[in-house]
Image 1 (spheres, rainbow, N blue to C red):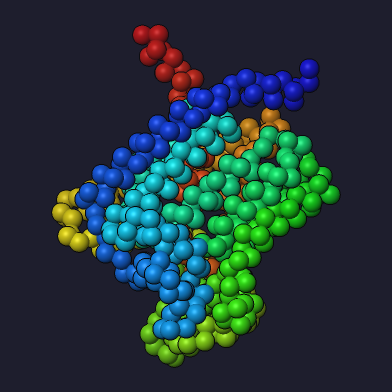
Image 2 (cartoon, rainbow, N blue to C red):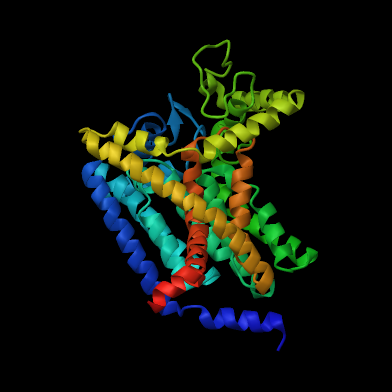
Length: 437
């Protein structure tokens, strides 16, 4: 037996059974859902800004009024989440609890998916720690109480990470790859940032030793799944907007927000027309989308050094702090929450996030080392998904709301890091002496 086969056999033997995985995932899901219900008893956010848009347009869709703005068809925001929320409203009514419970359930199931993925990639304890970290993470509880698209997108992104992770490329079947593409495509109808996901998928297949031809074929199959899921939205946009719009028309404006002479790397939407020529964006959103994208591209190519400099600023905004989640949940709660609750939530949330981020850094290094040692490439798929998503925000503006979809992946690698740290502690001489004492 070769060393490679012995490692693969050891990994297969130590992998928990499907029944144990199901029990672990269900338990973590239940814990996560209970914590989110407790949060909802304290925090009742009133939808404003983007979240009021989602609610209002979901109500219009549920009432059969179509997806419009100011009487005209729109694709300003992706229709995926308003359409999902409209379905919830039709089934369960449009009160506060229907939308927030749906988000809480999605987010809780995401914790279960993290548990399964961690156990499959490494060991059962890694999955349980990752799932518990995500379940108890206050930022995710906060977002689940807000009518935001992040919870649906985060669930689909995590599901894509689970479906796509296989030990060897020869284990892949076309049906599985096509299903993965459909999942990614559904995620794109919520937030189109995964449109280029076949690129990291192709890279992952090469790492998994699929070979160039097989990797290209599987990437094409994934792209076909994405196209199938997105096609109804694209056709609707062509009929209603009389233009080719894959999903939404805010991509150009988002790109311009991060690449203009006054950009700060984070949210940028000044009301001064001298600084913002796109204030009348939705008056003709297709034209304005193209104009904003063109202005951003011109700025990038004429200011390459500042673009690179601002790229690192955007990454700082992406990973700095937890204030956005708490602002849109606790900060918009009616009735207001007690001051002690708000202060405690911030301290615990920030501490948990920094702890998870530190463990995730350690876990990423450990996962890469283990993958190279065992020739088990599965961990590279969620890692490449994470890297791809972060790379996007070297160009697009970022704040901690943009980080929410990848926090399951951070928790995943934090679980791996926690197991590694505990192993080091157990092997330390002082720990062995304490155990013998």
